[in-house]
Length: 325
Image (cartoon, rainbow, N blue to C red):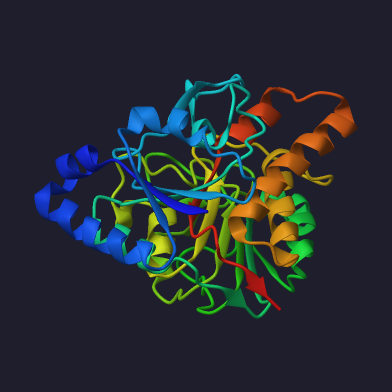
C-alpha cells in the first residue's frame, strides 16, 4: 500500500478553503494512480498508522511541521538542542523510536500550496546515471572521502578554498553528498579550516539543479520549521527538482577521520542501499537498521550521539525513487 496522509483542518487554516479544494482534487487524481488517502487530525496520525503492519507499506506525510508536526523528543545528547525533531513517531509501531519499522516520508510545503502539490505530482520519478557530486568542509576531508568513496566519486570539493562565489553544481547528477556546517538561523552551509567558516553554498547556487538524490550531514540540514522555500537549502533543493533529501533537523555529529560513525555512517549506509536499487524510502529504513546493528556490534550499545542520529535524520521527498543502472 502507498498512502498519502494529511490533516484537512490544519491545511484549511494554513491555505484556506481553495487550498483544501485544490488538494482534494489532486488527491482524487492520485487515488486513480493507486494511492490510498488517510485524512486525520495530526495528533491522531501516529496511533492510526499503528494499524498498518505490512513491511512494504509506504506513508507520505503531506506538509511541513505546521500541517503534520514533527515529534518533539527530549534530546539524549548534551548540546544546544532541547528537543530532537523527528518523524520516528510516525514510523515506529511502539514506544521504541530508535528502530522504526514503517516507511515514512514527508513532502514539505514551505508555506506554498503549489509547491506541495508539485511534490505530490512528481512522486514516482527514478534517477539513473551514476554521477556523483560531493562537497565537504576541509576539516572533515578524510571522513568525507570515506563516505564519498561509496559513490565512486572522483573529486570531493573542499571548502575552503571553494565557496559559494565559485562553486558550480552539475545539473543532472544522480547523487549529491554534503558534509558542511549548517545553522537553523540561516539557509547557508559553511566550510571550515581552523577558525575560518566561509559560506560554502547558498540556495542561489542551486538554480541549475534538475534532479537527483541529496544526503547532507549539515547541522539543521533538514530543519524546515517556519521556513519558506528560499530560506532553506532542503526546500530549495526539492523545489529545483531533487527527488529525495536526507538530512538532520538538529545539531549532527560526525568524526574527523574514518571509520564512519554517527552522521557519516547513516549517510554512507543510505547511499549503499540506494546503489542496490532499493526504493529510497526502503533504503533509508534499511540504513537506520544497519546503523543500529553496526554500533551494537562495534561498541555494544548506542551512546547519546548514536541515539540522536537515529532520531534526527528525516526523509523529505519521494520514497519511491530508485537508482536504475
